[in-house]
Length: 235
Image (cartoon, rainbow, N blue to C red; front, side, top):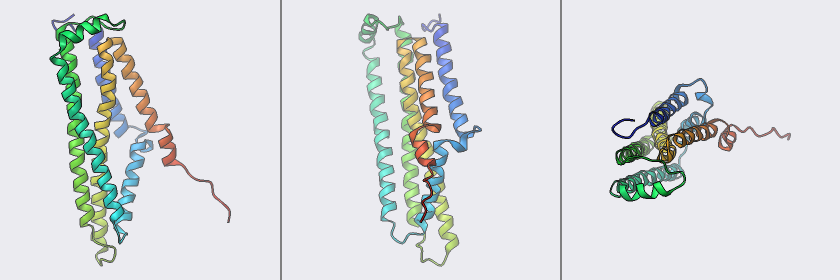
């Protein structure tokens, strides 16, 4: 056991958490099955959306969709700040919380220093999520600007219209990527909560979250909906 109260199982569990997050991030973005994942499939539809937008004369629908994406991102950014504030409050009530955990059947014996380390780690996760959501919100703003800068369908400069639409699509994809990473931090924060019940619970919750997120990318009903091909109907 270290001076901070960290045992070998704690270190192994934390290492497993970090490695699981890192490997999931790498495989989802650069793995052999990346193109079959839900995120990459939706990126293709973001690209198609911007190309369709460039051919529309009336873009009120596109503006409404952009506002919806921005509002959703702003909600998660503000939620991240609330989570940071709520978790920070636990640092001021360390002694009381430790007494409560000690009375629980699943409560693990832990020092004050170890408890504070866990809380700081949780704050860092929510802080990372906030920066991802805040940057995503900014990128959606940039996307809206590019949408507004895309020449109208009747413009004689078709090359500029398509080029600007593709730039808007790339910006939209980047915004969606950072939003996804912010949400991923929320999911892994749930796994991190398992550490408060002990290192073995920590590894179990990490594995469970990893399994759930992987399933949503490749075998979920959302993935099935995106890849669904309706049967051909005879005339």
